[in-house]
Image (cartoon, rainbow, N blue to C red; front, top):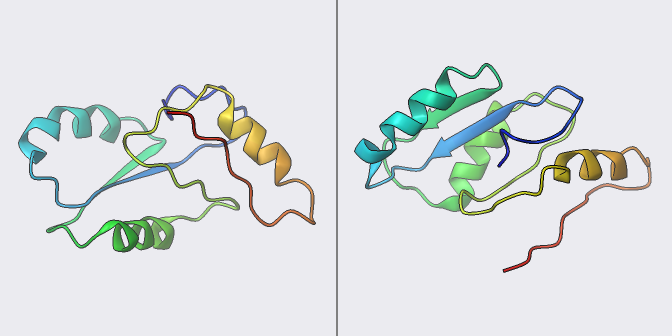
Length: 101
């Protein structure tokens, strides 16, 4: 869903695979997004937990804004645009969307 965002700005996506046990099955997915210039895939050698995976992504980021999304989250196509618009206000330090199960 992040690849399908209707966002006019520059979008860079860092995907962290935190030592998936099913990495062989994910190989074709990694290849699809590895050829997309917006995406960078980080394959961690072993599972070190969600927080360390997030740290790896943040350390690899270079944008003005960072959006953290879990792999099982499906975003509406306008989420990035809406969150970025909220961040234009200098009094806003963070924004989040509403999660619906």
